[in-house]
Length: 158
Image 1 (tube, one colour):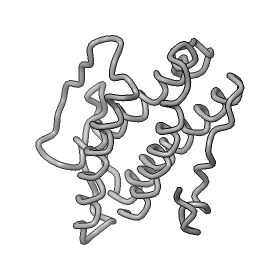
Image 2: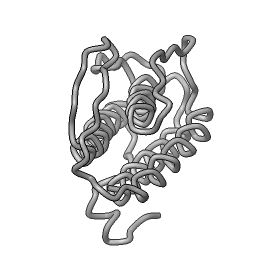
Image 3: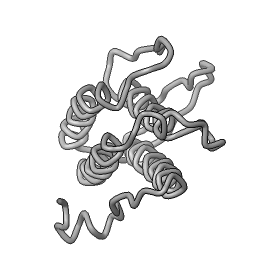
Image 4: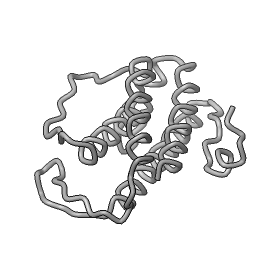
């Protein structure tokens, strides 16, 4: 599980580092995507990672309110990696990935899932939205870096 989270952190960092080089106007442009544009989609991935981490590692935070417009890419470049480092550390300490975690979603509805399924969801969620960000970057005329898992495992982690 920690390996999966390390990959996701690597991929998010690589894409965010690239995105920090483009003009603010392109970052905030409404691309009519599921979360609007590039910055809002990065924020969404961060927010989801934060919610899931909170569910996994007590004390559970029940209220997540972020003042508009949300963190900038420069702000995410600090707070997100700290969060993902803690998430990876937690995953590395888990003895039983089949342990069932009971939690409540943001609507306070109860759920229960094995830890490995939640970690898989967190990683897949990030991958899905990083793909959207890469597509939006291409629509703006940029060539984003590859964040494919195979590059990560092959050690091509520039």
